[in-house]
Structure formats: structure tokens, C-alpha cells
Length: 413
Image (cartoon, rainbow, N blue to C red; front, side, top):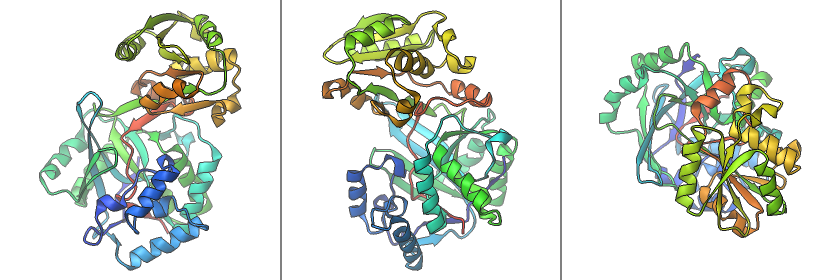
């Protein structure tokens, strides 16, 4: 994979407090949060990535040009790669430090197999992002890429930077500290380029943004900058690369006895009354066989669902997908037994995909018929499915923490 440093535009930290101007990716910002970010600073990046004015793309363009003119946004002295350590404490009190870097990589069509997707996308978000790029001529967020390097060559090279003062140190609203080191030494950049030169990349997050960049590149064949996209790269060997599940909330009014009868056809059911035991059993059992959790409306019990032997073989799908817990749930329970169509699942009609565990657990109290609690996805499953040219069901994975918008901007025209 061809990787280049970025002719970067960054916030001028002599003029703004970086904590006031960064934001998460546009697709996790709701209306209330958007208003909150708007009020923090007149220069918050949300006004570029998720503008709320009457003509949002044109207004974003005007602000982008104005901020550069005022030197609120400035160029780095040299093209650079940005190494990031994201530190947070998980729900069990363990310190997690995920490491990666932001650079540009050559855009490749999926047919080349140099970049592999793992999820399906929808059209609406892609058109929105294309409109923003056309108006402002810049990328503000990164594609999240995973590569595999067992030698950890980049991690070893970067060690010398970690004793220096970081280029940026900013903590987001979820308590994740983002420590950023600027790498502009040609020899150090070459270590990164050489390490990734023979690597295949897996898109972990940002499928919409990547497909938008592909589209923009096709529409602008003479633009050399448009042949590359800004990405964040992390090593599959990083033990802190954690993937969270996305749970399925059944909002359609379905009798709970019908749901229990449906799952009994395919799963052995174990009942527990403790939430902690429930979550632990899902993870323990899922290492041996496909296992999912179930919570029902007006029922204070938790159900651990362990797939009966061979049940997945009835699904018309490649073996790699048959052995995925979400494929089993979607095909055998949601579609075959509960009557959801593929269009309903894609549009989240009568069903909601929820990343937050607390929200999922409380959903039946708020009127949902049921919620299926998914086990943590396995990185190797994602790699195997992608390598074989297949994609997982929509909203299968949740890579945490999210990458901040506002650390670096990649102008392409």
C-alpha cells in the first residue's frame, strides 16, 4: 500500500484552545450535541463537518476560507504523519492505550483487494459527504484502517518520540485522551512507508467516507491529491484494538412468547438472573459456539442463547458468514421467524442497532419487545470474511474510541 505524509492544515493552538474546537465524527453527533459543540467556540470543527445553516455546504466553505485567512487554521511547516495514542479507562477500570497514525494512502478500488471493506453502506451519507468535499475541497475525518505487522516496526521507531512534548494533547467528551506526535523526519516517514508497502488494509470504520473518496477521485481524474485519502492506521497486533458489539433492539410489537418459541428452535437456552453473569456467560460460551443474549419485555430474567449444533448450515451463505453470530440472528430469527425483510433490517424499520450497552439493557423498559445482546466481535472473523470478498451485516462492529475530527485537515483542492 502506498502511504504518504499529509500537507496538513491544523488548528493554530496559539489562537484557540484545542479542547474547544475538536469534535467526534459527524455521524455520531445528534442535534443536541451539535448545538453544544456550536456554542463552545466560533471555530469548532462541527461548523465544517456538520453545518446547520440554511446552505450548509456553502457556509462551511466560507468558514473554512475565513479561518485560514485569520490563521486560526494553518499549514504545518512540512508534510507530516501524525502518531496518536488514545488513552481511556474501560468499564472494568483497565487503562487502554490504542496506538495508530494518520497519513494519506492511495485510493484503491475494492477489486484490487489491496483495501478490503467489511460492512455494507447506504447511499444518503455518501452523497452528503461528497457535497461537503465538493464545496470545501477538504477531508476533515479519517478512514479507520487496520494493517497487520507482527514485527511492530512502526511502534519501535516511534518510541523515541514518546519522551518528547506532544504536538497536541486533547481529551474528548467521553474522557478519551488523544496524545498526538508530529512525524516529519523523512527517514522516520520512510519506516512507515516501507512497513505498509506490502500490506493489505481492512476498513474498520468509515466505509461511507472511503466510498465517497473513491467517487470524488473518479469525478476528478486530473486532481493528484484526490487519488489519496486521509486515514488512521492501527496494527491488528495491538492488544488494545478492541471491537465492541452492536446490539439489536426489536421495536416492532411482537409477543415475547413468539420470540422465545422462535429462538428455542435453534438455540439451547440458559436462564440467569444476574446481569454480570449474563454478560460473562455470553463471552465465555461464544468462544466455544455461537452465543447471543436475549432480554424480553416484562421479564426480569436474562436468556443465554447457545446455537444448536449445525443450525447455521441451513443458511444460504458462504461458510465464513454462516459462522457469524449476526448472520445466524438475522437470517434464522429476525427474517425467517419474526418476519423482518432485508429492506427493514437495512433501514432499521422496527429494529434499532445500538452500540451503548446501557441503552440496550434499558430498551425493554422503554417499550421495546426484546433486545439481542451480541458478543464482542472477533478481529480474525472480520479479517477472514473480508479476505474472502464478503461483507458482514450492516452495523456489525463498533471500533472504540472514535477518531476525533479537527486533529488534522487534508485539503485536496
